[in-house]
Image 1 (tube, rainbow, N blue to C red):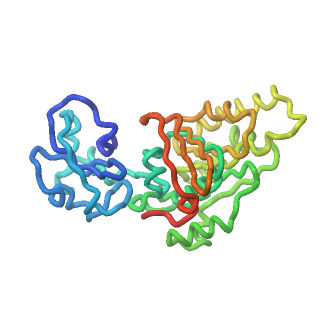
Image 2: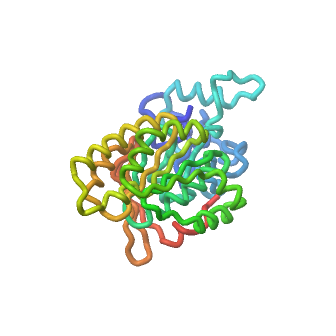
Image 3: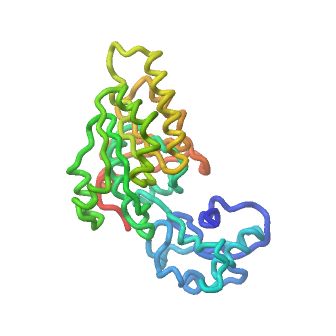
Amino acid sequence: MARLHYLYEQAEGGKERFVYYCSRCRCILGIRRDLRPAYEAVGSLGGRCVGCGHALAYNTECRLSPVSDDWWDAHQASTVPAERRDPVFRLASSFPHFSLGLPDLDSLLRPLAPGTTVVISGAYSSAVAERITFRAQLSLEMGGLDSAVLFIDGGNRSDPYLFSSFAKQWGLRPKTAMRRVTTCRVFTMYQVADMISKHLVRALEDYATKLVVISDLLGTFNEPELDEQEARRLLSAMEEGVGRAKKDAMVLVTLGAPNKYDEAVLSWADTTLDLSESGGRIRAELSRHPRRPPGAVTLRLRHLLARATR
Protein backbone atom coordinates (compact mmCIF):
# COMPACT_ATOMS: atom_id res chain seq x y z
CA MET A 1 0.00 0.00 0.00
CA ALA A 2 2.97 2.34 0.52
CA ARG A 3 3.67 2.04 -3.24
CA LEU A 4 0.21 3.35 -3.99
CA HIS A 5 1.08 6.72 -2.55
CA TYR A 6 3.40 8.00 -5.28
CA LEU A 7 2.44 8.62 -8.88
CA TYR A 8 5.92 8.05 -10.28
CA GLU A 9 5.98 4.51 -8.84
CA GLN A 10 2.79 3.45 -10.57
CA ALA A 11 3.04 0.17 -12.47
CA GLU A 12 2.14 -0.10 -16.12
CA GLY A 13 -0.90 -2.11 -17.20
CA GLY A 14 -4.27 -2.59 -15.60
CA LYS A 15 -7.61 -0.88 -16.10
CA GLU A 16 -7.73 2.86 -16.63
CA ARG A 17 -9.02 4.81 -13.66
CA PHE A 18 -9.05 8.43 -12.55
CA VAL A 19 -6.02 9.12 -10.36
CA TYR A 20 -6.09 12.28 -8.23
CA TYR A 21 -2.70 13.53 -7.09
CA CYS A 22 -0.89 16.52 -5.59
CA SER A 23 0.72 18.59 -8.33
CA ARG A 24 3.54 19.66 -5.98
CA CYS A 25 4.86 16.32 -4.74
CA ARG A 26 2.92 13.87 -7.02
CA CYS A 27 1.50 12.09 -4.01
CA ILE A 28 -1.58 10.01 -4.93
CA LEU A 29 -4.65 11.28 -3.07
CA GLY A 30 -7.38 9.06 -4.44
CA ILE A 31 -8.40 6.68 -7.24
CA ARG A 32 -11.89 6.43 -8.73
CA ARG A 33 -13.65 4.58 -11.52
CA ASP A 34 -15.64 7.68 -12.46
CA LEU A 35 -14.64 11.31 -12.81
CA ARG A 36 -15.71 13.46 -9.84
CA PRO A 37 -14.93 16.99 -8.66
CA ALA A 38 -11.63 17.07 -6.81
CA TYR A 39 -13.25 18.15 -3.53
CA GLU A 40 -15.30 14.96 -3.54
CA ALA A 41 -12.37 12.69 -4.40
CA VAL A 42 -10.01 14.05 -1.74
CA GLY A 43 -12.41 15.59 0.76
CA SER A 44 -11.51 13.11 3.51
CA LEU A 45 -7.95 14.45 3.66
CA GLY A 46 -8.91 17.67 5.40
CA GLY A 47 -7.70 19.94 2.60
CA ARG A 48 -3.99 19.11 3.01
CA CYS A 49 -1.69 16.79 1.06
CA VAL A 50 -0.53 13.91 3.24
CA GLY A 51 2.81 13.93 1.43
CA CYS A 52 4.01 17.56 1.45
CA GLY A 53 1.37 19.20 3.66
CA HIS A 54 0.36 21.89 1.16
CA ALA A 55 -3.24 23.00 0.70
CA LEU A 56 -5.03 20.95 -1.96
CA ALA A 57 -7.39 23.68 -3.14
CA TYR A 58 -5.13 24.71 -6.03
CA ASN A 59 -2.74 21.77 -6.11
CA THR A 60 -4.96 18.79 -7.00
CA GLU A 61 -4.75 17.31 -10.49
CA CYS A 62 -6.35 14.28 -12.11
CA ARG A 63 -5.37 12.05 -14.96
CA LEU A 64 -6.69 8.86 -16.51
CA SER A 65 -4.07 6.22 -15.90
CA PRO A 66 -3.77 2.40 -15.87
CA VAL A 67 -4.05 0.99 -12.34
CA SER A 68 -3.36 -2.67 -11.66
CA ASP A 69 -6.04 -4.81 -10.02
CA ASP A 70 -3.77 -5.31 -6.98
CA TRP A 71 -3.53 -1.57 -6.45
CA TRP A 72 -7.25 -1.08 -6.92
CA ASP A 73 -8.06 -3.82 -4.41
CA ALA A 74 -5.68 -2.27 -1.88
CA HIS A 75 -7.18 1.17 -2.41
CA GLN A 76 -10.72 -0.16 -2.01
CA ALA A 77 -9.75 -1.89 1.23
CA SER A 78 -8.23 1.31 2.58
CA THR A 79 -11.52 3.20 2.05
CA VAL A 80 -13.65 0.71 3.98
CA PRO A 81 -14.80 2.10 7.36
CA ALA A 82 -12.23 1.36 10.09
CA GLU A 83 -14.53 -0.96 12.03
CA ARG A 84 -14.96 -3.19 8.95
CA ARG A 85 -11.46 -2.97 7.52
CA ASP A 86 -9.21 -6.00 7.19
CA PRO A 87 -6.30 -5.26 9.57
CA VAL A 88 -3.77 -6.19 6.89
CA PHE A 89 -4.59 -2.94 5.02
CA ARG A 90 -3.76 0.60 6.13
CA LEU A 91 -4.65 4.00 4.76
CA ALA A 92 -1.87 5.38 2.60
CA SER A 93 -1.89 8.47 4.82
CA SER A 94 -0.98 6.33 7.81
CA PHE A 95 2.47 5.62 6.41
CA PRO A 96 5.28 7.97 7.47
CA HIS A 97 6.35 10.38 4.75
CA PHE A 98 9.56 11.82 6.12
CA SER A 99 10.66 15.04 4.46
CA LEU A 100 12.90 18.06 4.83
CA GLY A 101 9.96 20.44 4.57
CA LEU A 102 11.43 21.94 1.38
CA PRO A 103 9.13 20.93 -1.51
CA ASP A 104 11.70 21.34 -4.28
CA LEU A 105 14.35 19.33 -2.46
CA ASP A 106 11.84 16.76 -1.24
CA SER A 107 10.69 16.25 -4.83
CA LEU A 108 14.19 14.91 -5.55
CA LEU A 109 14.70 12.81 -2.43
CA ARG A 110 11.24 11.41 -1.72
CA PRO A 111 10.67 8.95 -0.29
CA LEU A 112 13.05 9.20 2.66
CA ALA A 113 12.58 6.14 4.82
CA PRO A 114 14.29 3.72 7.18
CA GLY A 115 16.20 1.04 5.30
CA THR A 116 18.21 3.48 3.18
CA THR A 117 21.56 5.25 3.29
CA VAL A 118 21.60 8.83 2.00
CA VAL A 119 24.90 10.64 1.39
CA ILE A 120 24.82 14.42 0.95
CA SER A 121 27.99 16.24 -0.04
CA GLY A 122 29.10 19.79 -0.59
CA ALA A 123 28.17 23.23 0.64
CA TYR A 124 25.69 23.35 3.51
CA SER A 125 25.38 19.57 3.80
CA SER A 126 25.90 20.06 7.55
CA ALA A 127 22.93 22.44 7.61
CA VAL A 128 20.80 19.70 6.03
CA ALA A 129 22.05 17.28 8.70
CA GLU A 130 20.98 19.60 11.51
CA ARG A 131 17.69 20.42 9.82
CA ILE A 132 16.79 16.76 9.37
CA THR A 133 17.73 16.03 12.99
CA PHE A 134 14.80 18.09 14.19
CA ARG A 135 12.45 17.21 11.37
CA ALA A 136 12.70 13.60 12.55
CA GLN A 137 11.21 14.57 15.91
CA LEU A 138 8.01 15.91 14.37
CA SER A 139 4.89 13.78 14.23
CA LEU A 140 4.17 11.61 11.20
CA GLU A 141 1.39 13.99 10.19
CA MET A 142 3.87 16.91 10.11
CA GLY A 143 6.39 15.06 7.93
CA GLY A 144 8.60 13.69 10.70
CA LEU A 145 9.39 10.26 12.09
CA ASP A 146 8.25 10.90 15.68
CA SER A 147 11.66 9.59 16.69
CA ALA A 148 14.72 10.38 18.73
CA VAL A 149 17.93 10.86 16.72
CA LEU A 150 21.49 9.62 17.06
CA PHE A 151 23.88 12.31 15.79
CA ILE A 152 27.53 11.40 15.24
CA ASP A 153 29.60 14.56 14.80
CA GLY A 154 32.54 13.41 12.68
CA GLY A 155 33.90 16.90 12.16
CA ASN A 156 33.20 18.17 15.70
CA ARG A 157 31.39 21.13 14.14
CA SER A 158 27.71 20.74 15.04
CA ASP A 159 26.03 23.93 16.20
CA PRO A 160 23.71 23.59 19.23
CA TYR A 161 22.45 27.13 18.65
CA LEU A 162 21.28 26.18 15.15
CA PHE A 163 19.65 23.07 16.67
CA SER A 164 17.84 25.30 19.15
CA SER A 165 16.75 27.70 16.39
CA PHE A 166 15.26 24.91 14.29
CA ALA A 167 13.45 23.53 17.33
CA LYS A 168 11.81 26.91 18.02
CA GLN A 169 10.81 27.32 14.38
CA TRP A 170 8.99 23.99 14.41
CA GLY A 171 7.17 24.60 17.67
CA LEU A 172 9.34 22.32 19.80
CA ARG A 173 10.77 23.29 23.16
CA PRO A 174 14.54 23.52 22.62
CA LYS A 175 15.42 21.71 25.85
CA THR A 176 12.96 18.92 25.15
CA ALA A 177 14.17 18.60 21.56
CA MET A 178 17.81 18.52 22.62
CA ARG A 179 17.08 15.66 25.00
CA ARG A 180 15.85 13.61 22.04
CA VAL A 181 19.16 14.05 20.22
CA THR A 182 22.04 11.88 21.39
CA THR A 183 25.21 13.55 20.12
CA CYS A 184 28.45 11.60 19.87
CA ARG A 185 31.52 13.73 19.21
CA VAL A 186 34.60 12.03 17.78
CA PHE A 187 38.07 13.48 17.43
CA THR A 188 40.04 10.87 15.47
CA MET A 189 39.34 8.61 12.53
CA TYR A 190 39.75 5.62 14.83
CA GLN A 191 37.03 6.89 17.15
CA VAL A 192 34.53 7.44 14.35
CA ALA A 193 35.35 4.05 12.82
CA ASP A 194 35.00 2.32 16.19
CA MET A 195 31.68 4.03 16.89
CA ILE A 196 30.15 3.13 13.53
CA SER A 197 31.53 -0.38 13.10
CA LYS A 198 31.16 -1.67 16.68
CA HIS A 199 28.59 0.36 18.57
CA LEU A 200 26.12 1.88 16.11
CA VAL A 201 23.57 -0.94 15.93
CA ARG A 202 23.46 -1.29 19.72
CA ALA A 203 23.07 2.48 20.12
CA LEU A 204 20.10 2.51 17.74
CA GLU A 205 18.44 -0.20 19.84
CA ASP A 206 19.21 1.55 23.14
CA TYR A 207 17.80 4.89 21.99
CA ALA A 208 14.96 3.44 19.85
CA THR A 209 15.76 5.79 16.99
CA LYS A 210 14.74 5.57 13.34
CA LEU A 211 17.41 8.01 12.17
CA VAL A 212 21.16 8.19 12.56
CA VAL A 213 23.00 11.24 11.22
CA ILE A 214 26.74 11.00 10.61
CA SER A 215 27.84 14.56 10.00
CA ASP A 216 31.13 15.21 8.16
CA LEU A 217 32.12 11.56 8.30
CA LEU A 218 35.55 12.22 6.74
CA GLY A 219 36.31 15.24 8.89
CA THR A 220 39.14 13.41 10.65
CA PHE A 221 40.51 11.74 7.50
CA ASN A 222 42.69 14.72 6.64
CA GLU A 223 46.03 14.11 8.34
CA PRO A 224 48.99 14.51 5.94
CA GLU A 225 50.67 11.36 7.23
CA LEU A 226 47.50 9.26 6.92
CA ASP A 227 48.29 5.83 5.50
CA GLU A 228 45.91 5.10 2.62
CA GLN A 229 45.76 1.37 3.28
CA GLU A 230 44.83 2.01 6.90
CA ALA A 231 42.23 4.60 5.91
CA ARG A 232 40.56 2.18 3.52
CA ARG A 233 40.56 -0.54 6.17
CA LEU A 234 38.66 1.78 8.51
CA LEU A 235 36.27 2.83 5.72
CA SER A 236 35.50 -0.82 4.97
CA ALA A 237 34.66 -1.44 8.63
CA MET A 238 32.39 1.63 8.67
CA GLU A 239 30.63 0.50 5.51
CA GLU A 240 29.72 -2.77 7.22
CA GLY A 241 28.49 -0.89 10.29
CA VAL A 242 26.30 1.42 8.21
CA GLY A 243 24.93 -1.56 6.29
CA ARG A 244 23.84 -3.25 9.53
CA ALA A 245 22.37 -0.05 10.95
CA LYS A 246 20.21 0.78 7.94
CA LYS A 247 18.22 -2.43 8.36
CA ASP A 248 16.21 -0.71 11.10
CA ALA A 249 16.86 2.98 10.52
CA MET A 250 17.62 5.61 7.92
CA VAL A 251 21.30 6.58 7.82
CA LEU A 252 22.18 10.09 6.62
CA VAL A 253 25.87 10.76 5.97
CA THR A 254 27.28 14.16 5.07
CA LEU A 255 30.63 14.97 3.44
CA GLY A 256 32.11 18.41 4.01
CA ALA A 257 35.27 19.65 2.29
CA PRO A 258 36.37 17.55 -0.71
CA ASN A 259 38.37 14.50 0.35
CA LYS A 260 40.17 11.79 -1.61
CA TYR A 261 37.94 9.19 0.06
CA ASP A 262 34.62 10.78 -0.92
CA GLU A 263 34.01 8.25 -3.71
CA ALA A 264 34.45 5.35 -1.30
CA VAL A 265 31.71 6.72 0.98
CA LEU A 266 29.43 7.61 -1.94
CA SER A 267 29.60 4.00 -3.08
CA TRP A 268 27.77 2.92 0.11
CA ALA A 269 24.73 5.06 -0.64
CA ASP A 270 21.29 4.23 -1.96
CA THR A 271 20.78 7.97 -2.57
CA THR A 272 23.45 10.60 -3.30
CA LEU A 273 22.89 14.35 -3.40
CA ASP A 274 25.45 17.11 -4.02
CA LEU A 275 24.89 20.70 -2.91
CA SER A 276 26.82 23.56 -4.50
CA GLU A 277 26.44 27.27 -3.76
CA SER A 278 26.47 30.16 -6.20
CA GLY A 279 25.19 33.69 -5.71
CA GLY A 280 23.02 32.96 -2.70
CA ARG A 281 21.45 29.92 -4.33
CA ILE A 282 21.96 26.24 -3.74
CA ARG A 283 21.97 23.77 -6.62
CA ALA A 284 20.96 20.31 -5.42
CA GLU A 285 21.93 17.56 -7.86
CA LEU A 286 20.65 14.02 -7.41
CA SER A 287 23.00 11.42 -8.89
CA ARG A 288 21.59 8.18 -7.48
CA HIS A 289 18.23 7.12 -6.10
CA PRO A 290 16.64 3.64 -5.83
CA ARG A 291 13.39 4.82 -7.46
CA ARG A 292 14.05 8.12 -9.20
CA PRO A 293 16.12 9.27 -12.20
CA PRO A 294 18.96 11.78 -11.76
CA GLY A 295 17.84 15.40 -11.56
CA ALA A 296 18.54 18.80 -10.08
CA VAL A 297 16.73 21.71 -8.44
CA THR A 298 17.81 25.17 -7.33
CA LEU A 299 16.70 26.80 -4.08
CA ARG A 300 17.58 29.95 -2.21
CA LEU A 301 20.06 29.60 0.61
CA ARG A 302 17.69 31.39 2.99
CA HIS A 303 15.06 28.71 2.34
CA LEU A 304 17.47 25.98 3.39
CA LEU A 305 18.13 27.75 6.67
CA ALA A 306 14.63 29.08 7.23
CA ARG A 307 11.53 27.69 8.84
CA ALA A 308 10.25 24.34 7.56
CA THR A 309 7.14 24.23 5.45
CA ARG A 310 4.33 22.42 7.26
